[in-house]
Image (cartoon, one colour):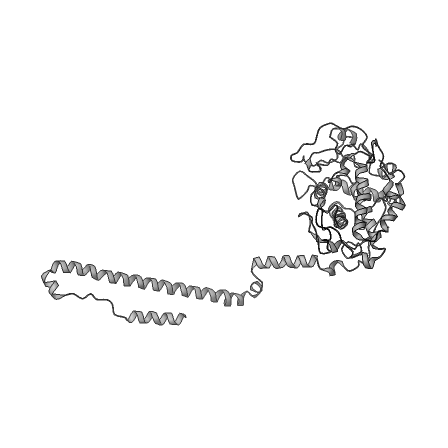
Length: 435
């Protein structure tokens, strides 16, 4: 192509220049006029020819530079910089890296294989005093550690906001059990990564069946060896107000009683004035930002006029045994949620009755016990139940849509995960069992 342009250019240069023809007769009769006119007429073809020459020259220069740039880009640079040009361009490179990361995270080889040394999650009362203190101290640490996801809040607050947000969609659906199982896994790892919770330690669980005769009297509510008691006095009547959350607080030198009563309580409960978490100051209740005291209000939903008690009907050994004998996953998950899960959330009241129930550290030992129920049910027939998953995909969705390939959503708080990654606690990722 370049050679043909050069030949055409040479042929054009060989052509004779345009010379105006002058009529002698006309020039003799009107010499002055013809001289002036012929000059003007002769200049026009010369100007047009010169412009054409410049345009063609510019075209040839541009074409030549284009060919040179192509030679440099596709021949010289790949030769001298082979490592860089062996990769795809940046946008495609980023996309491929994302695909590799996603496929790596969701690669069954990463989570279907059994772990070699699974940790054991134990009942709260079986822990030593040192082990209980390590768990309490790690929670206090999270309640002092600023969040990376929002101003004026802590990592501990993040979990309440997470549960009250995308977590609300997993209730009354097939994803209820796997979503909470994975959330406990995230929480446990953050305790270890951010707050020095021992690597070999695990989240404890509360076996409610041991206390079914009087849940409110359980040692889990002991101010000395548990999570603190029921809310014990009316709080400030200040109503919750919308707006930005207050700055995260840390325990001060004041007494828990004086700190808590200066704040409003929530959920028809009262401030918890004793125990290791009396100084917690949650910043949100349901979808309203309001800094308040940790609140509880023991009650029996079946007897509205009775306070200070929690019904233990669902937690009797025979009631739990009935749930564990359920054949179908859909029905099993429904019974676990409606009876064991909801019963305690409603019975404890206060913070615990809202979608931001993770404000109360009791949330984690309660949900660990629910996860233990699923673990027990799965290992009754592991060859079937470690992959059995059906029901609604999420809250208000069409029944029968649930699949192991469904995605558990975490709203950017952490990576979303496939349901199948949360099915076995003794996989390479989760790697734990229950006592």
